[in-house]
Amino acid sequence: MRAVLLSEFGPPDRLVPADVPDPVTGPERVLIDVRVAGITFVETQVRAGRAPNPAMLPRLPAVLGNGVGGTLATGELVVAATGGLGGYAERAVASPPWPLPVPAGVEMADAVALLADGRTALALIRAAAVRPGETVLVEAAAGGVGSLLVQLARTAGARVIGATGGARKAEAAAELGADVVVDYRAQDWAQRVREAGDGLVDVVFDGVGGEVGQAALGLLGDGGRFCAYGMASGTFTAVSEQEAARRGIRVLRGVPVTPEQSRALSAEALAEASLGRLRPLIGQTFPLERAADAHAAIERRQTIGKTLLIVSGG
Image (cartoon, helix red, strand yellow):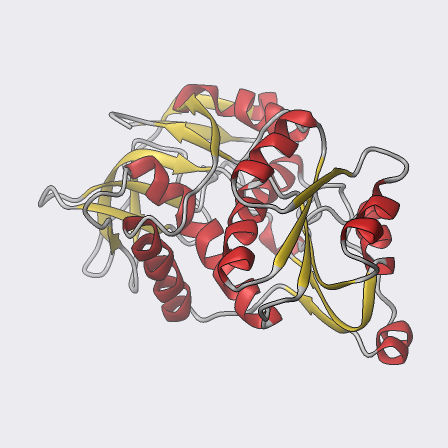
């Protein structure tokens, strides 16, 4: 089968299309003919050899990709997490509790876009316990997870301020329901958030980290919740335990879930999409053999929303 192989860590061009053996199936390993594969920012870090956790670096050569959508031998449309590897390929395998059926009315690309980002956004919004009338700041508001957080925070009754990088992303965040959008590349963006929020905000969803995340931390009111879910800048936001305690801030760095909980959250995200209540923002797609170009676009911050690989049929 055709797949994209990583034989050495490094820049995007280390992702090379190749013919590789089909994955090994077994009593509990279901074979999926892949139509669409998802790409995450973390996968670009793994490819570069700079994963947030060294334990995430695979033994090479390896096929990256942790989320796919396609068909079973029965013809059923499904999505699945692959256990961290094997997604950038024409065929992939999934083990229990996966795969997950795609609801009627949900396009395969949308289902794959919601597979990981949907469960992440749902877990974050619940962990933050967003309440009606609160003001929520969503960084990377036009990203895969951020765009969903904008919608979920609005559904929870919050006033949403979206922080994005550039006019195109700002427009997308506004279309998804952000009440106010600011460009975090502007020097006065933090002041604009203060003005828009009538002071400080109640919740921050930090998908950028670095200087942006640090500035957002300063915009959080005492007793607020700071939810770090990404590091698009390259580094996570540093929050000292002393500062958090002094200000009564609750700091969340990801939301640990079991495989069964992960599947349940993905199923809920797909159900919300089937009812028209949650819409993934798919900004760009690439053919499987151009996975390197997809990684390069993500690293150059040229993408909007979710980036997908189209393997066959879409």
